[in-house]
Image (tube, rainbow over all chains, first blue to last red; front, side):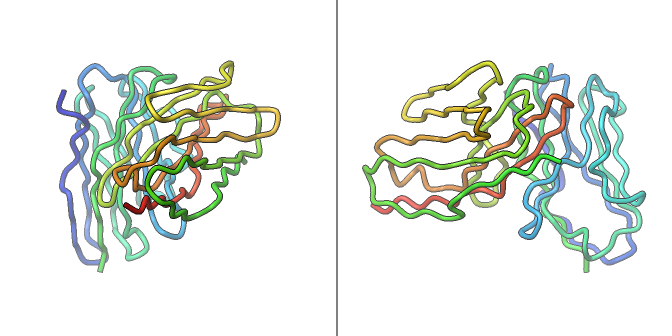
Length: 113
Length: 111
């Protein structure tokens, strides 16, 4: 089992640029979650999918953020345009069913200059 | 909105000591409560998950309890080891399928 794979591990870009974060969930898992972690706000759920369908995106901070899951093995989180306050660690997690534990990737550390 | 609080924010204990980490939540209508461990620069690792109908879960030296009526969960770590040093987070899942994390307790076990 390869675990949840996120890429890139680190991203540094200038304000105004488009940023795309990628996630490959554990094979067979039907739930996928995107989180953001900062020192000030802790860990926040941004959006989650069930069977590739977005279920709750109420945590997405602004229209600049969008997430897609075109198939069961791939999801993206996009920020366009990026701003310095978007700097954070973004985690992807997956689970087999809602009641089962979530498995996290190692995160993408995003810095917007 | 659910508020999840973890106290203390940081804890330092000598190796071998038993310890308890606390998690409080304001809305008792939870679906489950989960405890995670986070190592520096890493994602979260699930330790224990307690369904709303359960009172506790055990895994090795870890025991997690849940008291919905008082809005509390505790994580008990027996015979602590330096390898237990990490940040521990609890997360409550509401019946509306919303997830709320606490801000974590940073644990240091001193050899």
